[in-house]
Length: 423
Image (cartoon, rainbow, N blue to C red):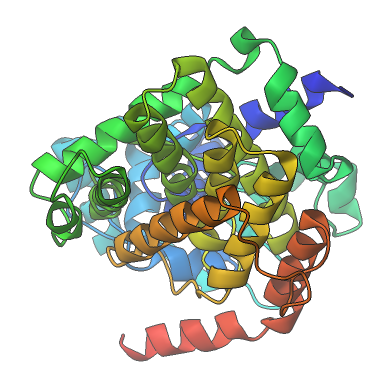
């Protein structure tokens, strides 16, 4: 197997704990870094984000609070944010820090603007104090800082920034592999090198239990939780409940996948629930979840970190279909067939921001990935000549990325326009 270490490093980079929705959290991460570099009290904070960051940050709850949105996350980052915590940057939030953050917001010192004419994920934070200024720029992926400045002098700058192009993230290297090579890696990698994947199973199940047994969200997970012995309904209910709790601001981390906590819920929970229901051994389940993550990451390199389509369906859902087929003993043909079945069935679901309603999209994605894998295990495959499918899973994924990034290039503008009309 070529370069096992590269895939392990990609997993460690892309499968990380996240507290709260990753878009406002990524902004908070940049704010915390800018605050630390500034080295004095921030007097003015200017934030510039691409349309997808604003879309996904508008209606989502901030962990440990009853508040929503990017401005709240930014204000909290000024009070308690620590960049060393990465996507858990706001984990020290409490009532006292929230009160201070709300006072900051009343001062109108934080400005949030849409960054137009930029491709892909973009977060720029400029912090100004009495004597100094700092600037932090994130491109491509949520934690990928490509520029840090103090008083106009670069403390860190990737070569890519100088040509106005983001430095390629490590996950882009996954394009060097075929799906069959990802499966070979999962089959053969020493288990201790991927044992950390189990942390995500534990973490995300805990968020699901919080949603099922707490008083969060809209009650979708509880409604679906009719019979824990029916693995399909339980997988849907646990995933939906976890999303509800997370979108409502439950102060618990989840394990993300490819930069998204909700992606992590879909990539992990269906595979874990089905595997446990089938009484499979723990190692098989962890290896299946690992394949789910890898396929999710692979797809996101083509659709982009943030896109007009719901990545919980077209990336994590497809990844989960591969993971499910794997743990059920599927052949390579069946695993790739599940991927193509999933792409054929759910590729049109749009992303209209992070919010409570995402829980329903996640439950639909879980049901679809279970169907897609069960079809494949019975050798039922959507024909490769259908729609955007192709003979190979890789080309089908590339076609999906083309439709998402090029074919729907104006979709996000319209979605954001519709969302902002309500303001």
